[in-house]
Length: 409
Image (cartoon, rainbow, N blue to C red; front, side, top):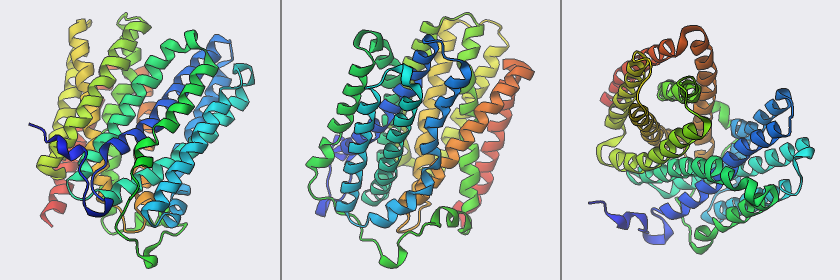
């Protein structure tokens, strides 16, 4: 039986796990960004904007790709628990302000809306840097796995609500009402943090304060390229299949509504639950064994999709099973990635080092999603799935060889 006390435990001095607080902070990041990424595309296409203009929406992702540039500033300024609290609250208030402001303009002012959304995500990315660093400093040992579960659950839960539920009510409530509610929701998610009056963390050394170039010096650490290779490879194949599963379902004759239910609701719900269970698994068996276990699960997933591609037309039940397995693999893999990233941060540079590692996974995912489209176009979906199986086998060999050596040392 799961010990529910771990969700509310508090160690002396205000340290220890604070899982509900971190879940609220992470889901506050995810829901608005998921909503904007989906809703703006739909609204702009309905307003008959050219695809070239719709392509500008990709610019709103830049703050989350470039956030490593100002992460040392956050690390440098946030020394005490009060500093982190002030930074998170300030960033989230600015985040909410720009969300509400963006909602005051209709889609005819698309460039202004995109600018305001981008500014909101700069604030959101800053909140994320501070939240990640605070999570690392407040949680030690096995507790890291559980706070990483909150991060993944917040991400997947936000995706399901932001790109699913809110999109369904957009026509009924209207753009201004939905964005206003989103801004208020972001502020509401600050309540657990505001209620936690005493946040104490391990005191930072003044000699180890972050420098502006520390995002680059991360790569100069001895043995760090083992971790970089792991971040690039570990769920690259999962991202590749996720990016192409919707077009594949279209080719199989499924409607957009059916695909939305299968992947957007059932799939992300599975990932949400898998993230929680993945945290407990990593907590119990450790990162080393979890890397191998979840890698094998990813291999089973890729083999499942390859096997279905030989069937021609898989049954709906088979597709549901494969999609649930796909999202579960993704959800569990994120726990290993985040936990291993927390173990590779330097004192005083927690936010910077964790941010650099998450950016590596984002860039790897973008590259893999792009290559998957090219592979599917040239080799077909069967060729794509076969390639993903090959990448997964390479990843498993990498984990077994590289981390066996590290574990032995």
